[in-house]
Length: 418
Image 1 (cartoon, rainbow, N blue to C red):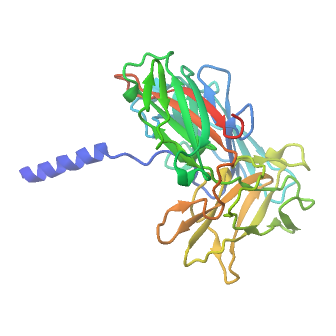
Image 2: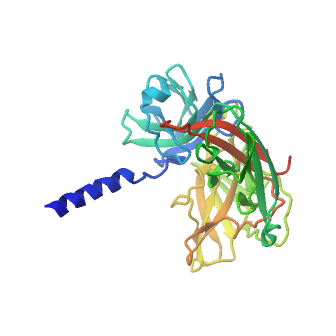
Image 3: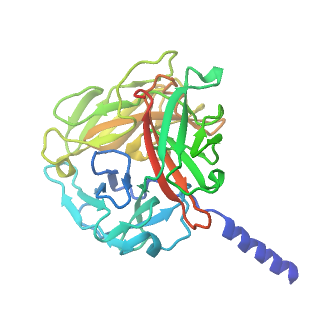
């Protein structure tokens, strides 16, 4: 009996210490498309707002099932690792804990019928009370078991200053491919007792969570400044500029479009994509992985931009025996799943088609090798120091004795505009 009780005790201890998977940007229903989430001042911008300001974020998405449905939403406070904070909703939210999305419009003059939903936060019903990471949950009929989508929201109370530079890697073998970020955090506006345990900084490339590096301790401390410049940290693959296509109009072929067919639906055949892993960098202009819903032939792309089946084909110079290719971008949250997987055929090319709303899209291909099972977006795209990238720096602070982590600083750096 004693050993049985001990085993049960160990089980509950392990369960209590086990972490749930971190919250991430995700869409859980196939009929939900074109999810946008950004600071309302600029489309496709980083979804961050200042606590207590008049700034808002905008959420927009389409429901291709038509009609109207009851969509509710709430916010949940998280730490820097996107685990739920150990505080109640009453401690981080004013007013109500959840609400219903009531702003929607029906599509007009489109082949594909849909309902567009829109939400702005904060609003009179949902207001963040403290700074930090928040996960926005949208679900159906007030039931969080019927999850529709999740989005990461950042609420900052700017109390520190961040200064950063980008240089080539300190490692000789990586100088032609990698970008190293060195930065300093000035904590004079904070009451920090032990910077090595109370402050940590997260870096992302092009707002892409999969690139995130979390700095838990500074290289050294200089007065009120925390310096992060160790030779082995914050070394990012430069990668390549994103590929793109433009479907702002479906009346004529734009760059990268081979043919457009109109019948009961719009079908767009794109030109073939080559393997871009070449010896030298080629200058191209991109939107750092973003997408924009636009329609030159209408007045309001929220309701009159149509959908099209976009057909992609890739000459990867690799076969299905070597691995699998995926197509990713901000438009699909960089998710590697069945929806982003390409199929290989006997012609030696990889194919897929996606149903996407009119606009301008950045995208790239990720290769998952059969031997390593590790995703790599440089195998098919190339990797160059000269690539223009944006870096987001988020400074988190957990005061001694606090039960949650604050977001006390934010900075953005462009590798080509220092």
